[in-house]
Image (cartoon, rainbow, N blue to C red; front, side, top):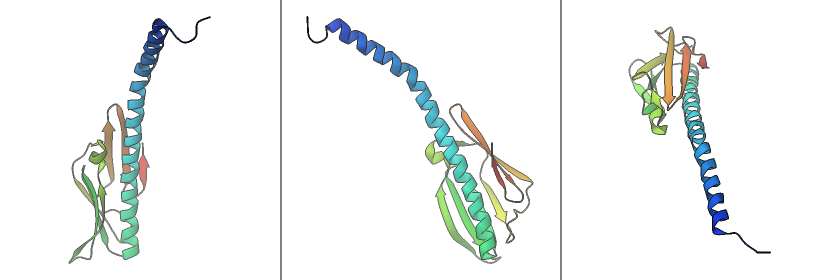
Length: 142
């Protein structure tokens, strides 16, 4: 009774393992795309919540500027604009932001000025999500 594996058995095992990897690889890439798009959507949602709360707490107009490469929050008292917070935008994770640069002002009562609904489209690969912000500052991720 021989011990060990023959060369044919070893090659057959490697071929089967390679085929299993080829089948699993595309779904792993899709899983990564889904995770990155979800993460960018939640970061965008959190930025809106932060801007709304900052406006209410400080009693000033909060300006949230959303660009593909950065998220920035400033407050304004009518004369000066003061920096409060910034973070990397969706593009840093390879996620595409469908709209261009947008600045949304939040009133001291937490309501956004001058917009009905803001919709941001985020995508990477075959995955996409939309972040919808109502005029009242409520955020919905679709």
